[in-house]
Image (cartoon, rainbow, N blue to C red; front, side, top):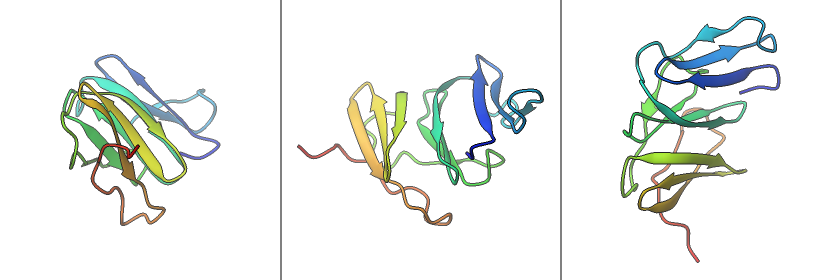
Length: 116
């Protein structure tokens, strides 16, 4: 989430964080999620799609997760992409978008289909 931190996933184990270019890694999800399909983020917010149960976000570097699926036509999210102020989620039903605020308390708005 910041220039000095990296996040990565391993199949069936969860998400890890490193603050020293990968020399030391720390698990941040334990067994909370079995399968992580996608991970993206910024210096303030981290997003994952997990276990065919949709999108989650964290405002505290992965210590706690908030489910955010409002407006998604399905919860099997295969890809996530973060732009300046939008999160895009690729699902079996298409690509959906949501606004992402810089406020650490506002988090994520509901998903919708991008307008043409």
